Image: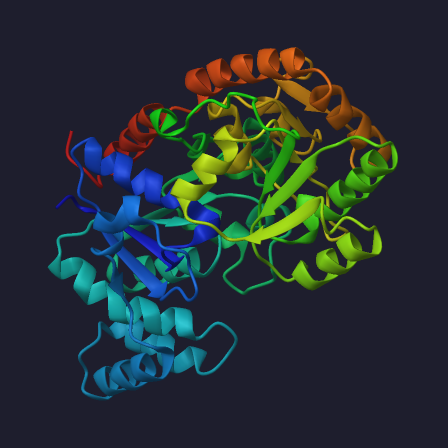
Length: 400
């Protein structure tokens, strides 16, 4: 085992398959990072291809049990003095559980020879890692993704504090690198871009044989994915008499509202909410589709997607992609070459773009082939794994 550990808020997670891939690729490159998860997942579809990683995850105790255990350790003087002092001073202020999680994890990390902790998202796991460093001197880094940097919540251990203390801050697009460097100019050198990687060989190119043609989309059923705009576009296409199907894969808080919108538009035989699916089934659905669409939008509070992994998966399946020029999306989609970009919240323009591809299979195939080439050049998991290895090496987490 290396001196590296990964700490997740919840693992595994259907919406974060890039986390499986990253850990799996580091294993293929000869590392054996320990994997810890603060929460146990619930109602997640099985990911059989990642079972070796999932079976190795070490979970923290439930909150009440954890608090009792750490309070007992404090009373008996078993914690380092800085940890005991900080826990007593913090009391039951907001986010107090992060201190308890750090106090539980620190001794176990030391026993395992862990020298560095990496977290995904500037959220619960990263804040726990912040306290681990403060209590036990074990360094940390994190990968920042989307709303955790574009619309961060006002925790006392803020995004600025996390960036200031981290050995490195990885983010997944050039757009996000510039966003963070502009906001935190004193830390420019530690903020770096590593694209999420995908295992290209696992994705089968579409044969564009679906009849009627199929539009597919994947993501959590939340505002920033733009699914309400997609359904409105489907209604416009339906009224034009275009024959097609649309499948949206994912779950989330807007499911009921989206089902109501589908029913009100008379699209129950055209648009399907498929729920979450295992990765193997997602790959199969992509291979059987004609067009991938994700009409990302910026939320009122500033939340937005950054570099949606599902777009690179669609590119790997040689599908043309229709999306919007939000944040890092134009780093993936070259308009008119690998897909089409339309403005946010413009369902009519989105419908026109979809119709163009649904009615012209040769154009769809050409854009899809170029998209797969671009995905191979930019998003191969081997490249992102090597880039992360170099970062962890520089931070002393792994040997040269």
